[in-house]
Length: 277
Image: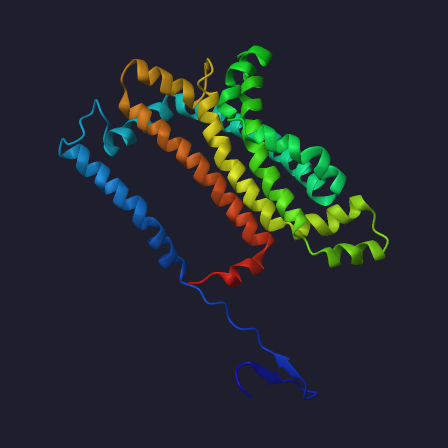
């Protein structure tokens, strides 16, 4: 027999699954690292040659030194803890709200009529325009910051989930109904699994927006977090601390996105088959 099938003891053909094509992990890592490494080299060359002076942008070596100093005295771990907590709570709040409203809007016509028009109108309002209102309503404490991040995260989650739910195969839904499943069970057992690609897409967008909104939220009279470090660094023209905080914002967003991509691969392994290498 060919390499695609073999005969078992009873003479039945047992199919052999094709091996998944893919690059070696080391090659993939190297390809992904090319862009960041080139940017780092260009940054170092510009600062070392004097094209960029320290008062404009500190060099990578200065940023690394500052990282060690701030980490050793405890300022950086505390700032990271506060900022990650803010972004995480806002993301959970916004993504949960968007998920719930997206399922309601996408699953029933009545839900779409009641929810979608309001969500589309609110989505047109830039979340940064709500900053002053949130300060008036909720004060300058943590509540206003977390709610601002939550609002920013709600709409991408809602749009993707509602679209994904509407695109679920209706024949599968009708089959579930014929087996006696109620609406809540169908939504949990059939609709949400079928809309998982859209759920993860919305979650990744919401995660990115949570970091963007975090930067805006930490402009609201903060006394802790990366935004506080940046405000103090601005007063003293410390471009090394400013560059470090910008990089840390990027690392937070990248780490969250990589975590979601890993979760997506684990829950939907079949999606890798459509990737062109």
